[in-house]
Image 1: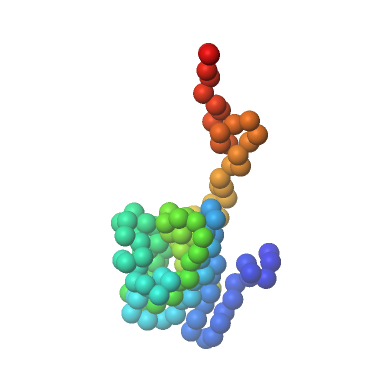
Image 2: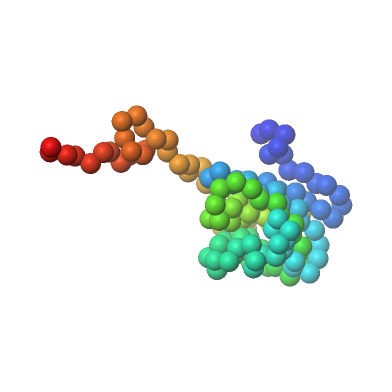
Length: 139
């Protein structure tokens, strides 16, 4: 576990969590509040326009019933919308675990603390991509 992965408690009311998915990294700050979620300075509904990605971000809060009792400030970078939503989901779960350690069994039972290690396979020599070959030409 490196210094970046260590759980950090910033102040008595804030907790930090880092989430990763594909090439995206999300840094989540959680504090007691009314349920405000800000991602890169924008509200959740403006940042993630796809309903599936919004639900992916909120799953940890909904499972632990903390949607209206905490405020989230998220900074996310890299990757696309799906990877960023997955990174936010993991970061929120890790921050919730620091914020209230009694929530860890619920988060772990829903696989929210497990890193999805799938990455894009590299392009291979002589092929058009990782697996796709060139089209056969008879002439």
